[in-house]
Image 1 (cartoon, rainbow, N blue to C red):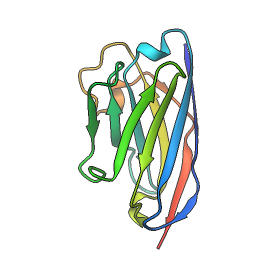
Image 2: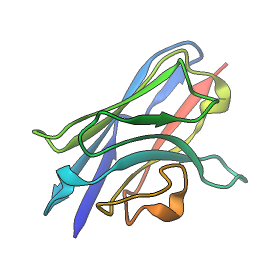
Image 3: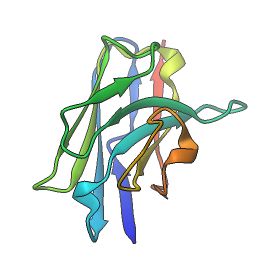
Image 4: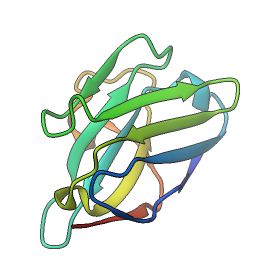
Length: 125
């Protein structure tokens, strides 16, 4: 079992940076691929970014490329999402996801086994 706890969500102005963290605990959590998804009111949950277990491969949604960077520190069992140049349309609840050991489609939420409770990011214009 893997537990995921997100933190770092806040209310910020457009253009500001923000970094989200996801602390993972549980057996073999550092060997799982991980990702970030987000959900805005009235919309379906959507893919934001993902990273392989060793961190050498990353994937990002077109809407965040060049602005968001995903990274991980396996020694600390922590996943990060550095968000720069935030826009009002980035407002959402951001969720951390992990595992299983092999994921064929990093972009699909159905590929992930474990989920955090989410952290709210609100970007004001």
